Length: 116
Image 1 (cartoon, one colour):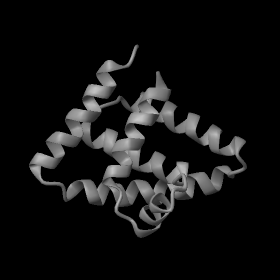
Image 2 (tube, rainbow, N blue to C red):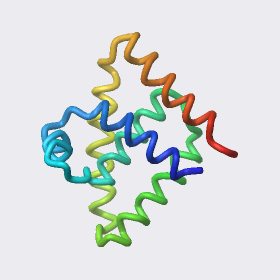
Image 3 (cartoon, helix red, strand yellow):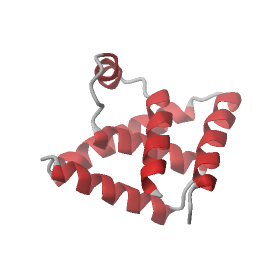
Image 4 (cartoon, one colour):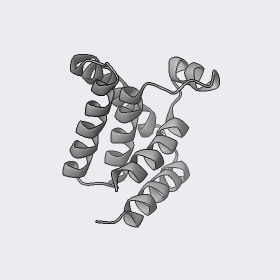
C-alpha cells in the first residue's frame, strides 16, 4: 500500500521541487535525498488532504527507517525532512488554482486507488 503511495508522491514531489540542490541531483541522474523527498511528499499530501495525519506519520516513519538502514541518522533525516517540508509548503502556497487542482487531483486519485 505505502510503496505505491511513496512512488506516486515522489513523482508529485519531484514535480513540485524547485530547489537548486534537488534539481541538480535529479538532472545528474542521482536519486534525490529520500528524506528531502519525504518532506515534500508530506507537505503536498497535507496540502491536498490526500492522506490522513496517521497515514502520513506512518509513511514518514517507514521512510525514516529505510534511510536509517542505508546509514542516515535519525537526526539527519529529521533535519532534511523539516527543511524540505517547509520549503515545499511555501512553494505549494504559490500554486495557481489550476495547478493546485491538478496536483491535488493526482494525489487524491492515487490515494483512493490504494488498498485499505
